[in-house]
Image (cartoon, rainbow, N blue to C red):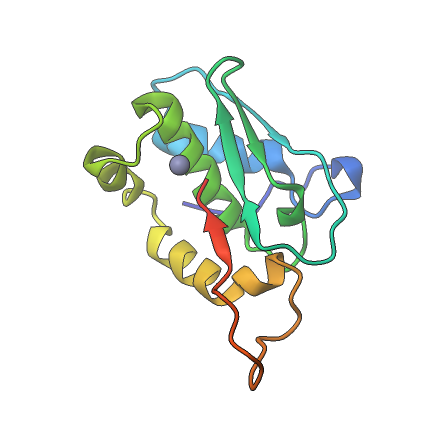
Length: 146
Ligand SMILES: [Zn+2]
């Protein structure tokens, strides 16, 4: 699977063309379904946060929202696509992260890379510039998946 976004105009002066990333996830993994609408969520300014919800699926509107902080040049396209894939699975399988869900989730080609990427880079998304060493240890940041 090719993860480079198509060279289209970028709306909202963003870095990733979400519609292209979503279209590729749809045609690679969910071509049997009608495509879902995938949008960036609203940007809320916060310097530092304890947790972040990277994506969500609304079963009423069948719309997927991706956290706008991911619309940045240091976020790899495959990671955004892993979230789109995850939210499509909620559309297909319901709200629970059960065994069936996890086995489907692993079919995303860059599943392991995505897990590794977020493990190393969550602090970036939470607005922490450095891992705080030598300070009183905080509870590890929460990753709200998803
Ligand atoms: Zn989920």
